Amino acid sequence: MGIFERYGLNVLLSRESNGSVIRNKIYHGELDAAQSIAGVAFSLAMGFSEQRCEIAVPLVFNLHGSAITLSAALDPLKIGNGKGLADWMENRWSKPRPLTLAIPHRDSSQHILLHRWLTLHGMSSNPQVEVVAVQPEQMPAQLASGLIDGFCVEEPWNSEAILAGTGWCPAVSSALALWHHEKMLLVTGEFIRERREEVVTLIAALLEACELCADPSFREEMVSILSLKQYIGVSEKVLRHSFNGGFMTGGGAKSVSDFHLFYGDKVNRPTVDKAAWALAGLRDIGVLQNFTYGSLSRIYREDLFHSVVHAYH
Image (cartoon, rainbow, N blue to C red):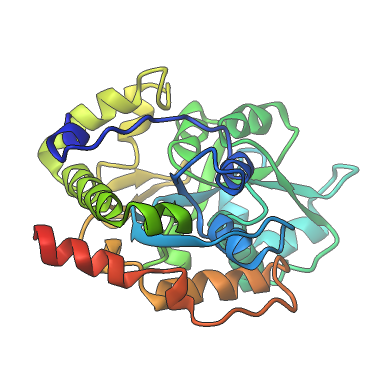
């Protein structure tokens, strides 16, 4: 695309395996910035993982984009959107272990969303349910083999299981938490202090990339890029599944026009309301207990975002 070059930026991209690696590399100064999750931002800012440093969120990349997928062995006609899960576990569950549901990271929005779904259906504290962390790309295979019974994860891993016939979707993330944010830009405090103008330019370039991702005319090219091995490396059919506005759940079709939201002031602005949602969710799942923090605007930096809007838009 050449976006970084057009903005005069020299950016070295480094693909990392998970949020914990990103957190460690930011803490040790190996990364100046990263695409990551709210949990990593709060972990570093508050030090509840024993690693604490100054961190900022000046841009949100997207809203929504996740779903819950259950094994095809769990009857969608009996369980529905989750209302029948408690009855299923009480009367039909026969495995000699708890219902095992996977999330990508302890501090992830998917953990918050899964907890909300389980709470909604009276299962959040049920000893028959166990939540485990699994790498997203491993989830469909583990579901197919019976190692796990479901997962909450971002796309395209739900679509991979649904299209393979090994899973079905009872809930998408926009239905569980409308306007929730998913991935965001993390920037170290040191990088902002030493190279603020470059940070503002970086945000501007990435905001243009978000706008491009939201453009329907770019959709096929984006799918083609993401299918490459050096990126996501799954089939274009799987990638298209959640982009067409008619998400096939495996138990029927859902019309989900807001499954992915990439661009717009309500999407990309790193507001205190977004921070408060993530913080409350992390407390709900037990990641945060007695930790306190001052103004959330010291992490979610609307001032930096505003600088970009003022200078480039």
